[in-house]
Image 1 (tube, rainbow, N blue to C red):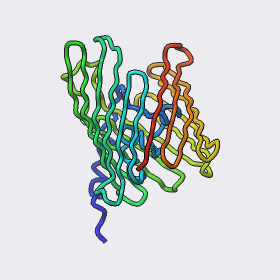
Image 2: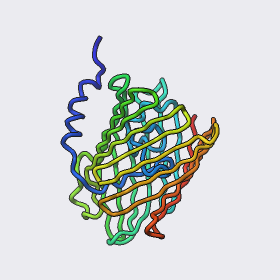
Image 3: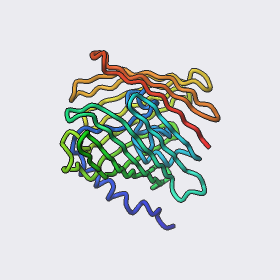
Image 4: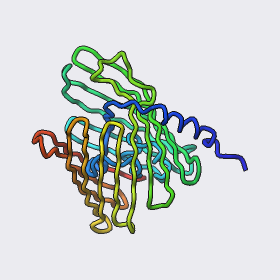
Length: 274
């Protein structure tokens, strides 16, 4: 039997992970599910996170999903396709947001294209290409980069994830405050009897995250989480609720810093399978 085509690139991919352990600010987008569970999700399979947290998880998403997310000064949308008619599991994503930085008001957009495939029956691999545009009052910058993600599922209820973000390094033409640098993230996902899911992630940015999801009934999911960024001395307590029906899913998340009253965020997501 001929080996799977992706098996020929497993060693180079692992070599890439070994090389890129350069730390910096990750600035990774989180869906409301991820946000409500402390920023976790690199080993979880969610339509709203596959394009942004770990493209390898696309191999486990079935059918087509349309995802959209709304928060203050932020909008995200993605379309995932993993049907028998598609050559590879794929996703197209877009994030747009505004923020205040020392250089003025910053407007950012990120257009992503993700592709994934199984390397073996338990190893999934994916890559996301990014095209980012950043606009300040008097100048603008464009950055192109990519992420590589792996997910290992030894059992249907257990998942391990590993992701390298911005593998081509920082764009030195942009101001240092705006540069996206290389970072690495890892995650763990465990489902207990189909009713409780425990999640834990960590990144090379000194971020440590944990989350818990519980099915209140067949359709309602409650979520709690905690994130600690030891480098910035920033902690977040998170919570949320989700509705997962046969025709659509709706999720809400709250993130709040217990030590800074103005450091909080609300977000709402809508997911439609079709």
